[in-house]
Length: 251
Length: 251
DNA sequence: CGGTATTTTGAGTATCGTCAAGGCCAGTGG
DNA sequence: CCACTGGCCTTGACGATACTCAAAATACCG
Image (cartoon, protein in one colour):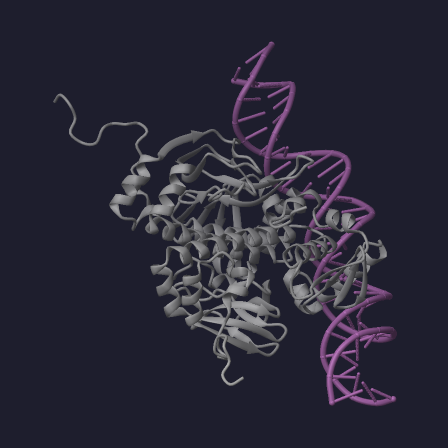
């Protein structure tokens, strides 16, 4: 066979129609998006977008974990959220980024060039509507995370983190696995980052893991792999009834 | 003079063009919005929107303070945010409300009936764009508030609350007053609500006020009126450099 | 297998939560 | 007008939790 038949083997081509996040968009819009889209890969611990910077692109995560981080003047950083497969990141419009976006693991992302993307958004009601819905989801998730942070005990916040992880990334990146009725969670970040995310210290996070383990709620196999032994108790620890209605929890 | 000349003295008429939040919208869109708008007043401690409910309207606050609250099954509530003059509230589209909206003080709001409002939004790109920007602001503010909650000490979270109050509501509702170089803040909620908002207990909030007062940073005149004596130290306590870039702080 | 970084554990101190008591203010009724 | 009352705020005392510093144990990487 000389000359293939399918689409050209353009290494920069992005097939958006296969991605869950873009499901429902019209083929023509997807085609237009694909023209301003470029796949990129970054190693772990890389700054994709600095703080107070107007990046050249708007991003979509295909694989890997990133953290949203507020950098203080003294160099220390405060993690304010994670970005995972299927999430989008980066400020819309002229806005400067309020947070830095850094890779935790190696990441594979799609870049949408800002200028063309925003131009397309002003032309396409469909895209603007799409972004509005993404924003609403983001807002809901941020509010949900706020509820986790409002827990007073570290064990409660840790439990909340694990629950949120299960709910948001149930079928993502092999983060959560239902293994014959046992729930296994891959903790995607270091204890240090987790401490920052939960608003506490590394030692307290470690003690919280130990405390939940001693109560038989979880069983940490390695620092990055946790088996949940009692989902009900975990939910209760995470704030109980609250989490029953968390965005995205169905069933 | 028999028969007035100006607009009809319709008591239900809303003059949106005078409201800061609607600045920039085209006259025709404002006119359309005015037709589906109705002014309402509620006494303090009233539930405007219950949890898990699809309200009949979308709201805009003209005067007063409301709280967003998550109600648990056991009847206790967790406050997740405040809504003040110029803010909008209520879920868009079919979404059920994730939080209850309750008045703290007597409030004067504008109702926009959901059906017509959403219909107008799908017709008017301008309105959809407007709502998208409102959502982005909301998201930024929620992230800012998250930073406040990530502070470990109650005094720091209280300082953060006061700073956020100054920044967001600088020229609203007489909440903040620059009195001859002295800054006076009206605390719009009870200690009990404040404790819930900060993720702590009433007693700790009270102690935090006392601690900041003893250090000369603030001077509580009444429980609901605080004079800030050292803005710099207050900012530092609130998280220092972080708050320097908080959304809306300019200059 | 060794070296390094990360994680966990330990001990002492600071902060917070809990329970209890007291103070302040507004509204009520004598 | 004043005492009474109830709600809210503040303060005190004590136990629980978290932070700090230090050291040990474990995991990770070549």
